[in-house]
Amino acid sequence: MSKAAYRAATGEGQPPQGHGAGPHKDLTKGAGGGKSAGASHRETDRPMSEQKTPATSITPDPEVIYTDKRRVSCDGGGGALGHPIVWYSLEDGEAECGYCDRKFIYKGDAH
Image: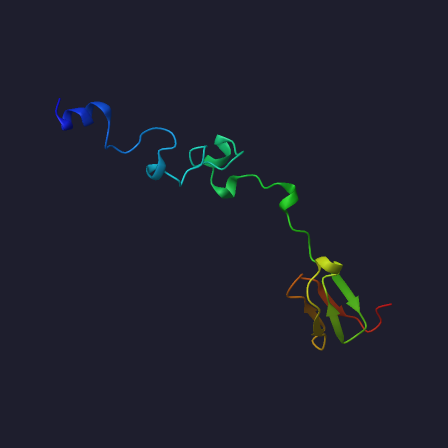
């Protein structure tokens, strides 16, 4: 048997075939064939605008704080989970925190 016939019969010199085929494996698709893990077939075939949004992912309205001060600070209110302290002037009547979206509104008699 010639070397060429032997290689053709045994597959020697050919790239590996099948599951886990080394460098020839398509790494762009997961085990689900490109679908996201845990998603049903119907859910991933619909456009994003038609897919349901879980209620937990809806962002609540930002907190509104009324104050009688013209200068306020915000740290996110979360202690270690907050954000760096920032100061805002309420000369225009209101300001919105750039970190946490809290809205500060000046009310001269805010007691």
